[in-house]
Image (cartoon, rainbow, N blue to C red; front, side):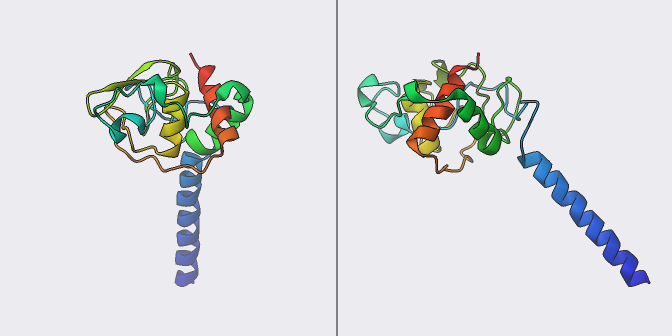
Length: 162
């Protein structure tokens, strides 16, 4: 009998811990996500590749995704599924920087430089998230496997956040 009670206790404890983990990483219907009041942006890659060039050099947009065809609602769904655990859209604190007011803002990077949060910066932040790290954050963002259409959707969503 004692073994059965212990097994049941361990099963319920495991289920409770698993539920907490799923809740922490799952959808956030109230859009509070979890990101901070720190600098507005996400981890990126343009300036660190060549620190001698300005990070917001508009001549290097060859790999930038054109968000003109992006769908903001699809971008919101991608954010909820893959980004909300670390990035808020309301200015709240979390593991990564908030997306509120990100679009076309000046982002301070950990190397002391700044970059404009445009299509090139956001695209690179998704494709190579640890190339440029936002000041005050560590480079913990995983590289996401989003195609160009999905990146355009995320950018279109970010453009709606003020």
